Length: 493
Image (cartoon, rainbow, N blue to C red; front, side):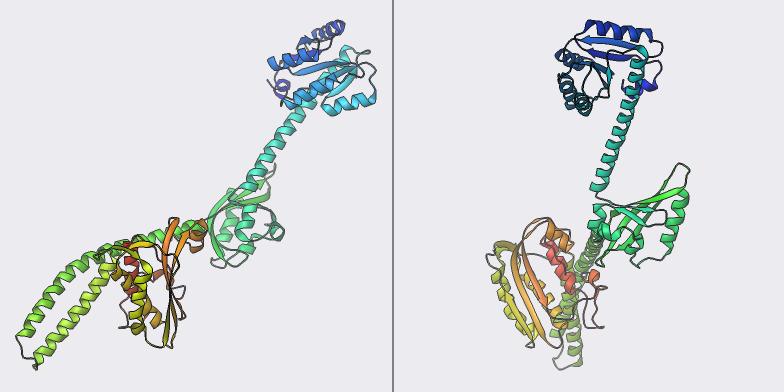
């Protein structure tokens, strides 16, 4: 039982160890404790030497040590030091005989609770000293436990991955932890003294903030998902809970805010949702394209047969040619839909990417026109990969056409190839769900007008186009997306 618990329990038996080689002192102290047993029940053990005391302290749990100290002897200091090094804190009273102040100071500094003279020792003095020592030790133990608890809490707050902000009752920031500094870009010096309004993004109405303060004043806790702004202007999403801290009278003195950054998770969820939507549309498009392709085969075949049975110069021939032309354009659309749905037949072979791209670039010059400078920058040390040259050509042609349309007055279009090793930093930078590893990366860039932020999330959606009516089907980048996914690759802009 601990000393603090013994003081609170009633009655409690105090287990005392006397260290000293004077038998008469042992009998005297035992007689004093026996005489006052109704006030302070105690059991006394005796150790004749510090070595014997160390053995007894290892075997049993003692609540108090009385040590007979001789002038010039540092045995008490050594015993105290050994106890402290073992992690045990025991109230320690030294009984001295005309000890000088320097020796007493050394003993107290080593950890002794009190030091009293043996000669005038009587029951009242010893009892009073024991009580004071036990009370002082219990107070120190409670303070030590409180300090340990506070140190652990402080360490937990400092090392927490969540942001923690403490404000006073007026909302003035008094503390922010390192996670807050890392997430928002505001240092502790910059944040302390400000209000949380420094994070206001302007993306939300004032209502959530009003509700926040009204709720925590009544219910003590408020939970919300907010859009905040970092010091550099970048927006981030945070799952925040704010709690009220009250004093003994129930008055709110502080507020503590705990926030978890949701930006990456929400981004990944949006990517997953978009991928699921694309997969669903792809399955639908693939099924429709197969059935539609069968119908187009019939239309094309009968149109060609009908053309053989009419005169070339007749008006019917012209109509049949229009039907055949429309059927072929429709067949091209079904081919793009099959590519998007990843149902396009493949002819894979192991080859180097650079020669394949180099051969395709020669035909792209005629496609994009003379006012656009097309450059191919082959990467060095490219390895061999499994590819379908026809699909690679489809990818590059669709991207080159988009680049051409974005540069009506001319410009530059560059095709590059490279080997890349994607690590955690690269994946986080691109904000893409990509397994880490070694990849081959073809890249196309141009000096065109670019893509606005509103359109960027939808560029791979089928039939989504920003071109005027009749100028595009919205299947170009959808085809690129389908081919890349069919080859277990990744694509982003």
